[in-house]
Length: 70
Image (cartoon, rainbow, N blue to C red):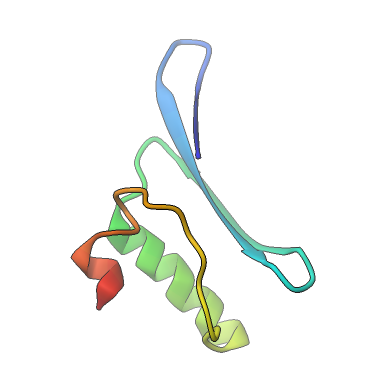
């Protein structure tokens, strides 16, 4: 997801939500969210809650990268 600041700079948000109970597990906001940062966030969540059976995501560039596939 992305939006823009008043000055016109675009920022991105990365939201992780548990679909079962609609709990927000993480929200990351920055001007740039590279794939390695997404992987770090998912690993942090997995270390606290365990790995999920399934992930559902859009086809943003950070989600179709090799870093996430590994």
